[in-house]
Image (tube, rainbow, N blue to C red; front, side, top):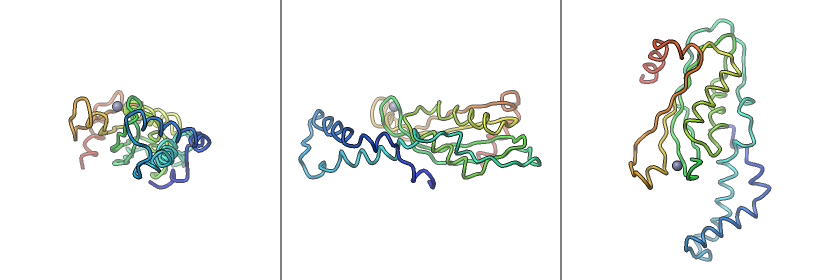
Length: 197
Ligand SMILES: [Zn+2]
């Protein structure tokens, strides 16, 4: 996804040596030989990966929602299939999927690419899917002050696939509604039927 590539987690950058050290310690503690060729660069690679996948900590998600003014449009706006990658805060294992956003503007609209950046800023952290979903809804509610917001997030969690219940391919779906979507089941249905198209 464009944009956040420029961002890295500055704490990771500033503590690179220590993180590399601790990754190496974990490798030893699980019984690995840290001197074998395939693992020599692993602590450094993991640390560089952390710079990227935790880049969200250096961004205030409110700042990435570019607001433009459009008094005309007060109909449902939907942006679907926004791909995200995140890390489950319980296992530090990846989960990923798609976010779908619908809102009814009240004078302010968000650039379509900005919604993707919002999702990215929120997901490049240790997260749970429920919180990603509610934070997207809350921040749009706060920044755009729309008549309503609905967010649906689908996720596949590697901590569930690789261990525990072992159900590869199973998806978790979470949703959050604000404003008119809370009170109108017709609006919720309209959003959900447009997602299926
Ligand atoms: Zn987990």
